[in-house]
Amino acid sequence: MPDYLARIDVMLKPLVNDPQGLAVRDGLHTLGFAGVAAVRVGKHIELRVAAADAAAAEQAVRAMCEQLLANPVIEQFSFAVTQAAAAS
Image 1 (cartoon, rainbow, N blue to C red):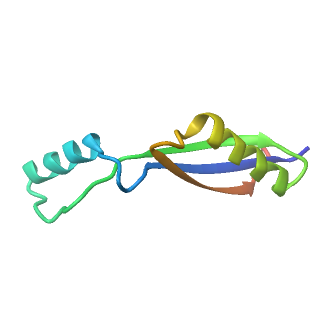
Image 2: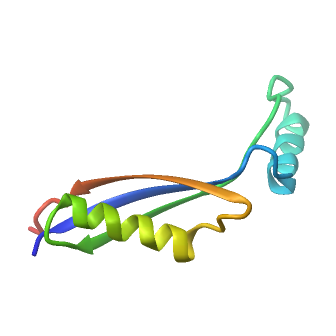
């Protein structure tokens, strides 16, 4: 069964307050980056999954996101699945 690499991005929904993003924005302002208007902080997750084909890998990754990796109440997610390179 081939391995697939999933790259997942999880972000707070646009209307959800992001205190970590505000802290990063304020820190950047303190460092002299006054042009930064807004910052949103999220998660980037990479995982390898064995699946029969790309469609099965995508289905598994979507289920992982919906059940554990993202909180559907306050977060949204996107992902890309590609066939993993063979181990050398």
